[in-house]
Length: 88
Image 1 (tube, rainbow, N blue to C red):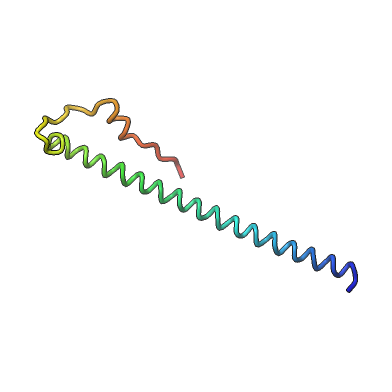
Image 2 (cartoon, rainbow, N blue to C red; image 1 turned 120 degrees about the vertical axis):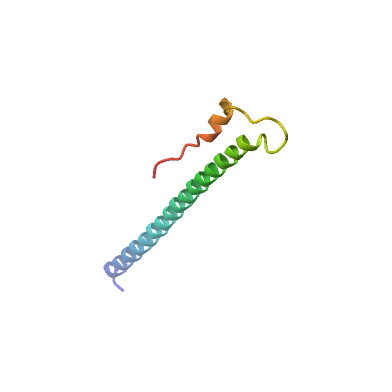
């Protein structure tokens, strides 16, 4: 086999390997984006669930312990309700 033919063949092999690596990296970034999206949904769902629980606590007192309900959430509670969710 001539040198030029062997060199051309190796260049094509290198190009194929590079395209395979880029494809794998693309799939990895898709997986990261999907995971981030699912985490955002879970955080949003938990924040909504917590708001409902806090509303029930206000109605029933402190979770049925006999303590009177709080008139308004304190500074720490208000901060906990505001979960930052990054824009897509």
